[in-house]
Image 1: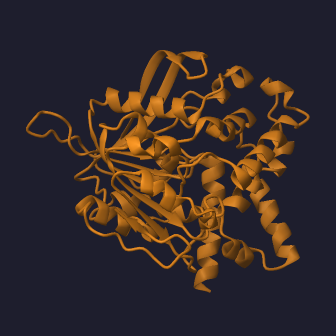
Image 2: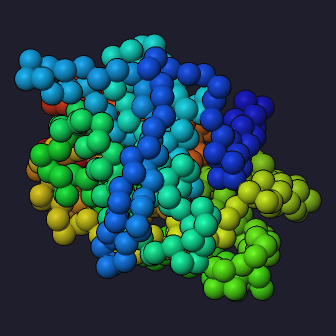
Length: 374
């Protein structure tokens, strides 16, 4: 019964986060929001935005060390369909930023940016629609860096990211090797998006492009047919065991699918979604992992179908990192595949240990990829 209720909660949170940006009502010390406006924001592909708005949420208060610089800043990066406030949901916010939590907002200055193309930051649905320039992960990272600079932070204590945010955490370490002490990448692999991970993204993108109302992104009414395809996101990111508990019969499966579709109805903008899933085209940190100077902790989940341990890539990747460790969280009734990242209770102890004693050995679990300590 407990695992069934947990699976139901997981699915409910997933529907809400992917379609409406669910956030908890709880607030934290010093919580505020702001925008950085960048004129002529140039993208790596050669295009530019005349004015890019980069939205962020911060928790806590900056502390300045003896040198006058902020020394308690952490950057927390969200996933593909999220925003900075995605980290404030009940299964993440209190576990990460509450009193006594690893990133207790009474002590840490937490920066939660909305990536370019999402949330309060500039995005196609603001008005440019299909004319919004194509952006990649590198452009999103550049925008995050502008936010950090604008907030007066020269060196971050930690860059923490989950899913796409974890992928971008790797990129941060390569692009700005002296910009942080620690990197924690959760539910990601530092290799190009390929194989099944690329194929399901292409399926979603083509579902949008083939919608009768797509009109090359210049639609006058929101395309609706592609909403029937969006549940592929839920299916790929939830664990097989959890889905089976939710849909043990054909009738239950039909009901779950209908609920998935209903969760996206009138909430998903086709242009935004297409750009979200297309933007991983420039992601390939593997050759440059040796440039990272920060200590690195990578945490993945054994039942994550987006980053399957069967690919056996993490040990090879971590061997390129100067100072890194890898942990694979084993499958259990409490894990939810890729969406395990939404349950900080599953991985926050590794974060606490990493912050408290970066040299300490992080415990791993029996898995196809053994934890690596260098």
